[in-house]
Image (cartoon, rainbow over all chains, first blue to last red; front, side, top):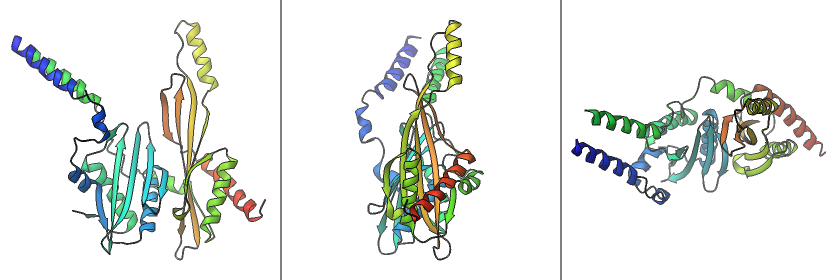
Length: 139
Length: 175
């Protein structure tokens, strides 16, 4: 009985200490940089950055997002979807070699980063349909 | 055994705290095509900048302030704050207060956002498609968000594009 009580106390205190430093979330240091990049990035066989950005915007609109801002020089688009939750997304486009563009998306669901591969896969599936190009794993 | 159960319950409580992203958040809904059609009109011109500036003029007519714009990509985003006080809720609150229910929070203000994206379409880019999307966030008297949604009433879009046609005409006439 006593052992169990100690166990529960330890488990609870572990859970609590997990929340102790909220500052750590500034750099989200708990996630792997390399793994995140491979989940969030795909390569497309095109060099038309502007057209790609425009297609990204129309895909986001189809998915129910409202565009917040866009910058063609930097190659970025940010958008928000409100549906009793807030899903915010930034997509960046940059050249890769002479023939490809790298598209990277990252999303935030309410106050949490989206780190599962599944939502990104769904996004790129929609995007490749709109691009008429295949999204290639880029690693 | 009882402790195990307690542990189980506690862990369930902690898991409930972590909301995960809904499965359909990134997939096309069956209504998405109809919504795209409702939110889009095309104009027979190659002058994207002209259409974009007519859109900016219209958003100003509608009381929005421009937040961001990127002419090269055909983007204008704008927003406005408005009151969200509605009579029904106020009456309800008064009734509840009279019945001794205390003062309930009611909707107070809302931020309304409009984002216009233009894009050349057609085989030789002879049309400019304009797609507008609206969102709003409503806060109550306690400063909590009570509604955050996309606006998908067809009437809104009908009216917007009626006014856009006028705006394009007015700017062509330099009024």
